Image 1 (tube, one colour):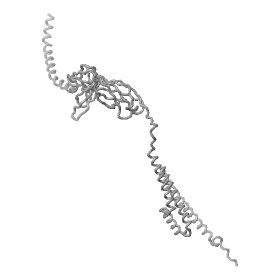
Image 2 (tube, rainbow, N blue to C red; image 1 turned 90 degrees about the horizontal axis):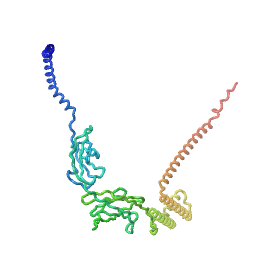
Image 3 (spheres, helix red, strand yellow; image 1 turned 30 degrees about the vertical axis):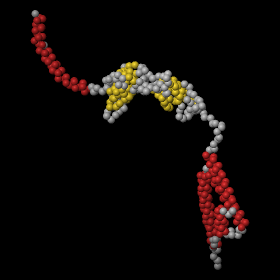
Image 4 (spheres, one colour; image 1 turned 90 degrees about the vertical axis):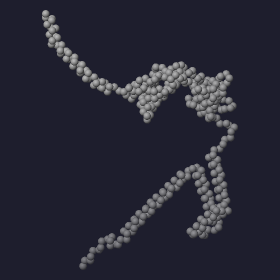
Length: 386
């Protein structure tokens, strides 16, 4: 009897309240659904676009063991490259004005012959990755056989500074030569019926003395490239002069000798002309005339000839001295010393003039004091006392 009364009371008192609560909860949930949806969508960033793969083309085969993987991605993207499902490397795209840049990636290791896959993922500047790009499937062909190189050869057709670099490669090969790890030249081998051709290569210039290395790479007509051949080390000696060849005189020495000969001949001609009353003699006569104008007209003919010879000899000595200066190349020093001497002479002359002026002033003062009257030197006598 008590149990029946309890159930009846629960149904009568609490059942309407529970129904009202359920109705309120459902209404509030329906009202908040659009608000929650907008908030969630606002927090999420848009999906970053995946790169677009361009090469190698899907389903093709490549002749090289390190094929270049190219594609497109948004500017500022860090592209991650995966080969055969394994991360192989990453690089930044080259930005473009259009907003989409390109990339080109070369694997750092040679791929084995056979089938391979490649795909990429782009990472935006905020560090968020894009989805995976399309997967490219390609195959790598068998590698091109590498050339075989041998020790250098020096024979009568070449020199030690340009030795023959010899080796063998398969027919139709384009052989590239690398000396000291730098490309030096290339050529196509002459085919042989055996399928393997030999080659001999020589540089266009002399190699520097010292130790060197060289190797070769072969490329077939389809562009398939082999790996580097074995490396051969060789030495280039210093160039030794041939003792049978005559020693050629330098241009500067020959020029100086010619200058000395010409200078000596000119001096001899000058002396001869002066003795024969040539142009130099006329110049000496002019100087003699000037001396006569100054009061030296009393010289006789013998004195005139002696002065002429002296002047001529002095002129020859000055010409020889100037020639020596020109030959030695010290004429700037000579000019500088002359200018310095002139400046010193002017300064000394000014000092002498100034000292003479001071002495004259002192003499004037002493003379004026010595010419004083006796009355000024002694007091006047006392007056007579009467």
